Length: 254
Image (cartoon, rainbow, N blue to C red):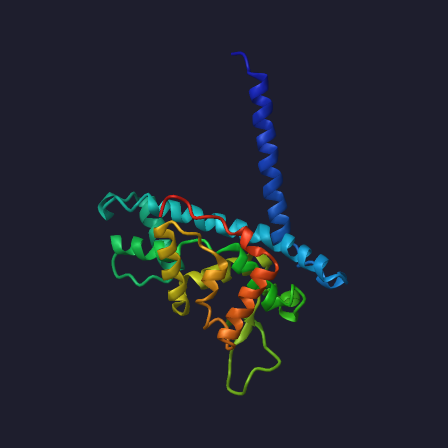
């Protein structure tokens, strides 16, 4: 059989491109966080921070999008029609996204679709920048924690210097920044404190409107003890740094 040389060349080129992207992402996810203190110019520091974080945010959103698309395929099937692989997927996501379920049902799919959805890149970047002081905080450098996330088991992270008497929380430690991004998005998509954010996101998606970080930030009152002041600072950072351009319009599927 005669080989189509041009086709082979295209396939090899595509394979090399995919391999390069995977290697680049793995390298960025695995390596220690860069030293952002080397930048004297604030604009240069911000640019370097966003260039480092954006691929990690996009990668996690891509994984979530894939999960969502697989769930959307199940909306028009009865549970009895699910394959074993589909059942396993739903069961896994129910646990991962903390959906209360006694028995697998179509309502589980509806609840998961509220939770398994992308977090606007502008919101993730603004929160990472604020919570980590642009990647320079002690918790960012020592624990890869750029989102101020807490944990509650002894030794799970770093004990804050100002932890009050009787408090047991620590600032969570992550093996790499990619893991911190994944944990942050899982928190936004599953914690009851952000039910309002998820409901607003679902409403915007259903009406075909843009899901912006600025709009979603309105529902972060419980992310910080600062409440409204925190929300306003996140929205200000999105506006000043022109991060809204990163938020993609919703797909036609809802």
